[in-house]
Image (tube, rainbow, N blue to C red; front, side, top):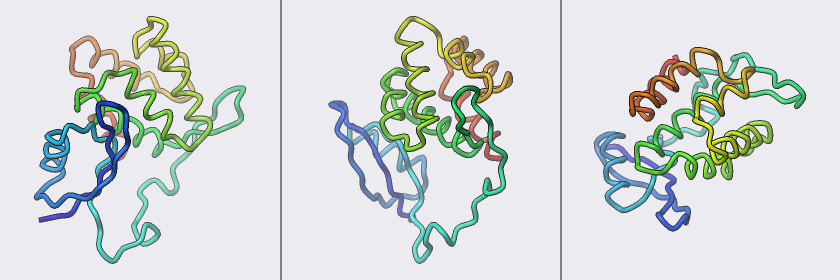
Amino acid sequence: MSSYTYEAVSANGANSRGTIEVASQSEALRRIKEMGLFPTRIAERRWGMTARDRVKPFSRARSLSLPFVGGRVKPRALAVLTRQLATLIDAGMPLLRGLRILEQQERKPVLKNVLREIGDSIEGGSSLTEALALHPKIFSPLYLNMVRAGETGGVLEVTLRRLAEFMEK
């Protein structure tokens, strides 16, 4: 059995954290959902390792420039955001609520602003694809087309998860 740490949000919006002993990450996800929580982050707990000891696959990744903002969004940050959004949608959380939660948790001001603008666009009646298309320096045409296909086919969470895996590789 492995130990997984998680962060989750309850139906009333309260944040919670904890550790769970299960055989796999999918089992951890299932158990957290059974507790009536919407998981926002699940990670295997590594005993005897600090964050600095772990290998970071995106340590030399390029950054994407944002026009008129002066900030950058690293591909690793975009991959993590994509995976988190997929997890929230898969857990049954509405898209706009998931985006607002991710916006609240985001520490990087550039990505926080982008999430707010995407949420505002969706709240105004745009689709997720249309909202993402307003940020062409961050979201590539491949990303946009995959999200469009996921929205059209009703499998947005599967598409976002695959996009995250592709970006991580």
